[in-house]
Amino acid sequence: MAEIKTKQELLDKLRAYASTPDDENIRYKNTIKNTLLSCPELLYALHEADLDSELFNSDGTINYDGEWDLYFGETGNIRPYLYIPETQDTIKHYVCYQVSFHEIPRYNDIEKYTQITFTILVNGKDAMDKMTGIPRHDLISSIIREKINWSNVFGMQAKLVSNKEAISDNNYILRTMIFELLDLNGIVRTPYNGETQIINNDFLGR
Image (tube, rainbow, N blue to C red; front, side, top):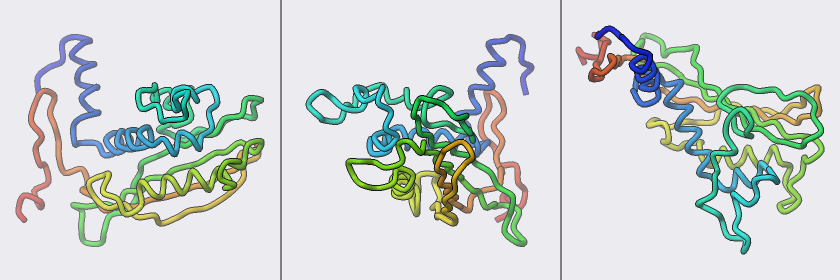
């Protein structure tokens, strides 16, 4: 691998992690971000009043040209990590997601069981969606289920294996959903400025 000589080369190498197939954590989180941010139903259910003009035009049509990225990130409602907010006067709701694995199939080190966890946090002061009559955490959960369960958004089918409700000690209603998929266990490596290579000899022999 070529030696990195400048800060720009270092940053270029790190940014490449978002596009190479090497790390499922980064790739899957990017897929989830794109899936959620292209879903007006979910953005509506998050009920972020300050962003209504980004989601809807004045005539009530969907504003597909709105800045939906504002729903994402450190100040947004959708976050690619588990975030437990402190009690606050401003009513906000959150969807957090994590990617992890802790098990591989028996006698098979080529694949692994990846779990994708969504944690939905709904402020108890705005627990019901008045326009549908559905509890907000259940509404958000159903939208995510529709988008992810038995879909191929990750390249392999993801199935819902757990869906639990709870309450936090800071007035948030929680629902935690876990999806599982069987995928490859990190058998590729992409050198900086190089081509992706298969690095598992067992796989090469098949």
